[in-house]
Image (cartoon, rainbow, N blue to C red; front, side, top):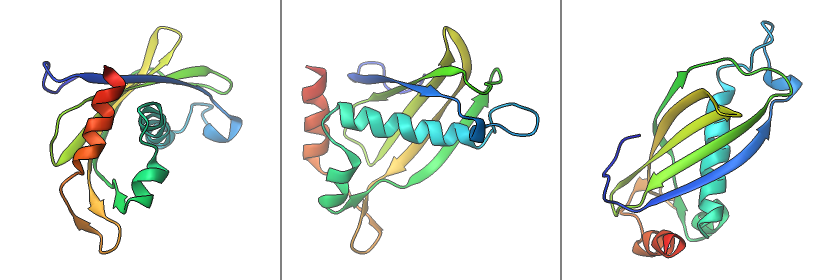
Length: 142
């Protein structure tokens, strides 16, 4: 995983059971669903850190995805129990880069990242992240 190594790191794990609807005709979990798992991972990481998305939106902020990347390592199949591991190195910056690892037991299924910016909900313009957001994340680590 990349990023500044001296920045404090938030980490969260969340279980996910592959549903029948997640699979394609080849019986693999459909490739597009991995981005949905990334979304679940970041939502749960922020909730764990005391900054649920619903609170960000209530404060007038959105976090659109600017970039997403997935490396597919091994297939996942119906009824597999996966772990979504999400990490974020906390640093006050204009964008957030979250990193993900999807595991079945100890086997790496997929990994990747998403990059987000803060946008003001009222006019959809990019804005500086609120300092309180990073302060709350820092408190979670301590």
